[in-house]
Image (cartoon, rainbow, N blue to C red):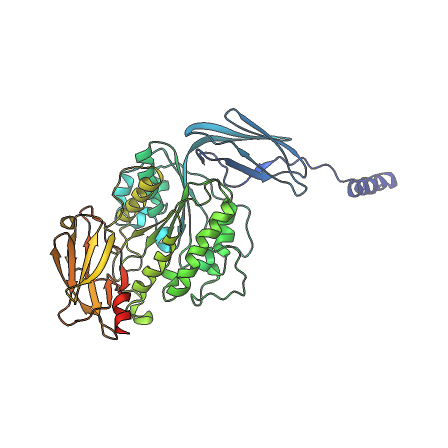
Length: 465
């Protein structure tokens, strides 16, 4: 190389080092913004992403135009005003270059979260044909990669998908069935985002848990450490506007009902705070675990019963709704193959509470329980007693102070059920469906079960003491 050429190359390199060229990388929207997406109607619409530091950006949706400047780290965010349902539209982001997201719809968006029973795909169920017969082109699907991370992630590789048969077959059965029913009833665009990982305890989904905070759920896989599912799956979605969350999780926490009763409501409140929507207590619908005998030998004959009551603790929060599955499931399979009925129950719960649809969405509710005739319990409900079906032995057991629980006889009197045992003369405790696999149940005429309970008659206990 000649001296002149060598000097020129060295000089050019020095200039490049001292005066780096300007960066003209185009503004990039967050991963969740892709063709075929659904934005939540009737709420502010957050839009965010990355650009060059302090870059000027223009965002366009329908007739709305927003000008925003990225911060010194290149982050930008702004919110479009609420819009009614409709589409397709284009979402445009302009900076040094232009990016267009096509086929953008505005409608209802739900996030479905959980472990393996939420993971189970349509093609793995015994209800494949029922699910496929309900396909609706208003439904749009986003399957979050099962990628837990130690630190909060900002992006992911998945894209929104159309509701064609191939995509449906590989999508979560519970999430798809829920979304399909919502889309069919509302007749508007519906977006279903599913993030689920098998074998994950509640700690994996809880924000901001430190690694040294011990999990009472026992040893877990590397994918299930504290906050890792939140970090890798939920964090990249925030603050995307949603209508609510559907939750099917708990099997990984069996054996720790007391801690779960504390952690579950706390998780819901933390997620609501992080999303920070106008609807700051957005609906949260969860599955109360079905009948099952798996792990009974290892964890006890009432491990599922105890856990179901722990789950119910979350209903103390506003806009939290429990869907009981005590009458369905497969006693010897922790992954029941039938998912259609449960997905429909979740959907009608949402339709009744969130959209004022006139659905019967729950089982009978106990209005009052009292001791009568000295040794019998009178139970009244929020419905006519003739509308109730007694399955098996009814599922009631009763006990006196310090005594064992005995199966009950069940009779009807006026508009109440009378439950008793000839062997119990001074009852102080009454349980219903309090077993891993109950021997009986009370079912409404609409096919919904009375949820389990464990009741103490405090007045009786006080009088004995």
